[in-house]
Image (tube, rainbow, N blue to C red; front, side, top):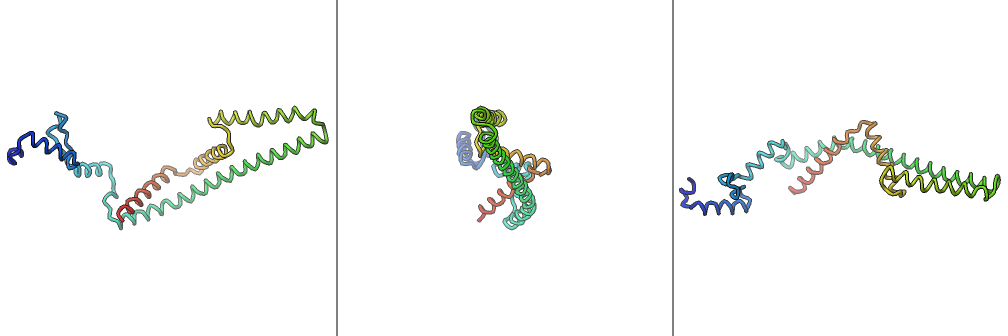
Length: 198
C-alpha cells in the first residue's frame, strides 16, 4: 500500500529494503519467503533486548555510572582483601612444605653420612642410598604425574599445591567466589564504559 502511494513498484521496494538491510538501518528477511513482508527497526529490537535482559545501568549518565562504580568498589574491596589474605596463607603453606622437604633431605644426607663414615661403610650403604634415590625421584615423580597429569617440575608442583590449598581455604571460609567474580566483571565493564565516554 505504501509502495503505491510513493509510486514505487514492488521490485524497487524490495531493492530499497535490501539496501537498507545491508546498511543496518533495518533488519530485512527478504530471502525468506515466510518473512519477506517483515522488516524490523534495530533500535526497537535493542530496547526490547535491554528490557528482557534487565540491564539497569545501560542508559545511566556518566555521574550515575561513577556513583555506581564507587558503590561496587566498596562492596568489592573487602572481598579482594579477604581473597588476598587467603592467597597469602596458601603461599605460606607451600613455603612451609618446601622448607619441610628441604629439611627432610638435609637430614637424610646427614643420616647417610653418619651411617657411611661412622657406623657402617660404603659397601653397606651404597645399595641403601641407591634405592632411596630411586624411590624418591622415580616413584615420587610417577605418583605426581598420576595425580596431576603433568610432569614434575618444582614450579608446577608448587603452583598445583598452592591452588589446591587456596581452593580448600575458600571452601572452609565459605568465601563467595561467584560474587567476587561478578563484582569484578561489573567494575571492569563500568570502568570501560566510563573511559569510552571520555
